[in-house]
Image (tube, rainbow, N blue to C red; front, side, top):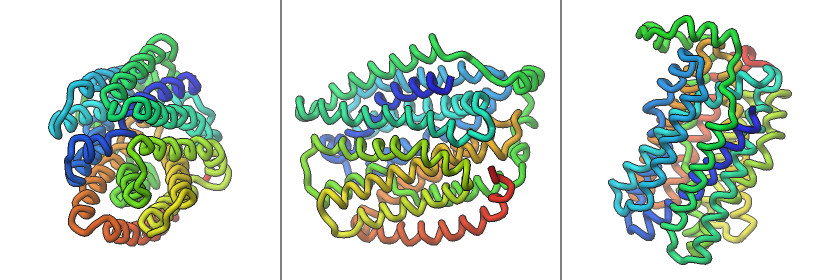
Length: 395
């Protein structure tokens, strides 16, 4: 089932990443909006899903049917793709991105709960790594498709949006027709015995397992200092001055690096410790930001940025999900995953909006230097905060 879920995510990521690969240029170049406008939209892209992540995880836990909650999320994102074919201004783009990201927020926690229920406990990070590997094949293919479209059709953004919709439809069809609605019998029994809504069931105090609160806080702290991919790519384009048709290949490079690192890093996290790998991923992001902000030019410097950015995602995304899965109680797993995803989404939304304003006010170089310094301090703080959690979460 993990493979099938990976294929669903692959189709969906081809859809979403083909759009994401052209969105920075579409907004700042084709539509002529400012980096502040892009920062707001990128913030929505990062954080709008936070509105529903906890609720979707809670519904998944209470009903015992995570597949159908995931279907609702994938379906909403598919419908949002239609809007891109007609959108042409800030508010229209912002509304469509919001709908798409809310769909992502609905589907992510129940999908990860399905993976966690299927995986063997000692191979959690590896199982998430396999899923993320398949997911990122799609994430690499989507920008490559966008590159081919823009090469054949200059300013062919509407064609990119049409291809995106087609892949979204395929992903939803595979999920509906092939993926079973499977969950562990113990969790299903607990879920079905408590389907009646009581607000007391939906409390933050239910997520008080040792180390989980510190993990959530640390994820939020680091997320608030995460520079979004789009800004890093705009930095690289300003430095290298290449044509717009090449811009999607930056996304391809990052996702190819993620694909290369996902499973090995997952194995490393299972064997050597998930928290050290999680923190090392943010050190990789810090190195990427510094390399993007320095006046080095050429293919080697750009490739180095993309490799470091891909390593960051490989060492944080699935590893964080594995840590939450290990620390949370089984009956609250979907809620815990949704909460962690919400914390990361909200913090990255604030980071994107704030960095857009900082770029506009101080210039890209100064903005990167300020955020890099803060991120270095945050990693040191995170290492201290998670020292005891590392003992609880030891594989």
